[in-house]
Image 1 (tube, rainbow, N blue to C red):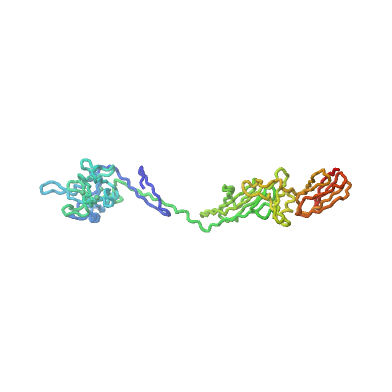
Image 2: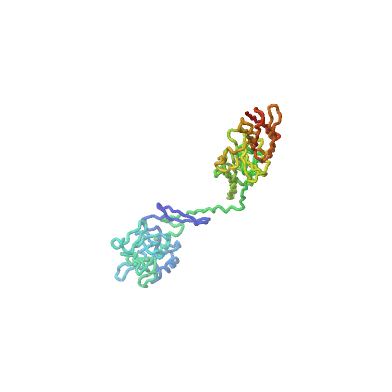
Amino acid sequence: MKNANNTFSYTAPAGFSGTVSFTYTIRACGTTTAPAGHSYVFVSAPGIKWTDAVVAAESAVDPSGLGRKGYLATITSEAENVLAYSATQFTLPNGQPYGHPSWLGGSDASEEGVWRWMTGPEAGMQFSGQDLTFASYIDGFLPQLPCGYHKWANHEPNNSNGVENYLHLQGQNQWNDYPNQVNTADIDGYLVEFGGLEDNDPDFFSTATVTITVGSPTPPATNCITPTVSITPANCTYTGGDATKMYLGYGSQKSTLKVTAVNGYTYTWKRNGTVVGTGSSYSFTPTTAGNYTFTVTASNTSGCSVTSNMTSICVKDIRVPNTCGWVYVCYTPSFCNPNNNSYTLYMPTCLVPLYMCLPGSKLGTCSMICGSNARMMQDDESTYIKVGEFEAKAYPNPSNGKFSLEIPFSIDNITVRMVDISGRMIDAKEIKSGETRKVDYNLQNMQPGMYLIQITDGIQSVTEKVFIQP
Ligand SMILES: [Ca+2]
Ligand SMILES: [Ca+2]
Ligand SMILES: [Ca+2]
């Protein structure tokens, strides 16, 4: 593609690779002198076709003795036209000089109106246009192109009958377009030029060739290895057996994501779409709840670049605010729980392993989900059950002896004893795990005063004071 300023651009066809050569020719523009050393010979061949003359010219003998190859003459300056015309000249019976009508090497057969030299060193070069409206003819003559000499006769080329595509030199040294074959009387022969085709010829133009190598497209990578990510927590604290879940406040606070390293591959890790590391493993230590996604891309110099499936890690923040290391556990008793109720418990971390051993326990509040709002409380926090120390609440207190005692949820059987201040047992009840934790007392016949209610599961105990008024 030709651009402005004599530059060219080239776009290789899709999928092409290899070399492409371009030859360009630099010609003197507006040369006025005839090419040095060229010879011109008229060959008589009345009525010869232009196309036959092209071939015949190649067999013509170089009169200079240099053995140069002939071609239908190409005329690129006024001086050359004078020289060429003189080769065709003869003397009429009346003594006047005249020229044999002769074929020259120009044609517009391949593109009507675009006249190019088809022979010799100028082959391919345009030397004239044509305007059949004659609008651009000045006093009957077609203006010269900036760099293309022509010697068209008045109102030529006219493409008469639509078939005039070949150039000939008329008897009065001007040019005309003619059909390939004309009457014998109209063409006496052809004009052969020698010179300019040989490498050692003194030349008035030069050529050069540019070769562009179009690189092969990246060959399709083959046998690429797809990385598979595994997650290994930094320690073995049991949190439910799912390495894709991490809990701020309990269990391993760090996980290592890794692939099986393969020789020649490099690895790039992305977390939530952002590059966070390279190498065959990546260490993840979250500090904020959320749903984190990871990919790793394995690449090698053979063009492989394969990205793993996405790995997600759900990080829940299960720390109970304003406590020292307490965490939430969601517990769904697997016994005496016909409605399959779940309870959010909170407890010191030392008690968590006990719950994690029970079916129906999971870390975090019962409503906690992964995502940016993992910490968001969707429960009524007042329903959370404190585990790890008994708390009992008697009400009303003081009372007239008729009161109720509420005891926090416990997984174990609880014994509730009421003693007076001397330690004498007044009442004893047993609450089995899962049973209602409310105990009603009706002790209106008791002596007014302070009594102690001892609640124990056999390991821990707590004492609640109740007062009975008269
Ligand atoms: Ca020439
Ligand atoms: Ca024509
Ligand atoms: Ca004509």
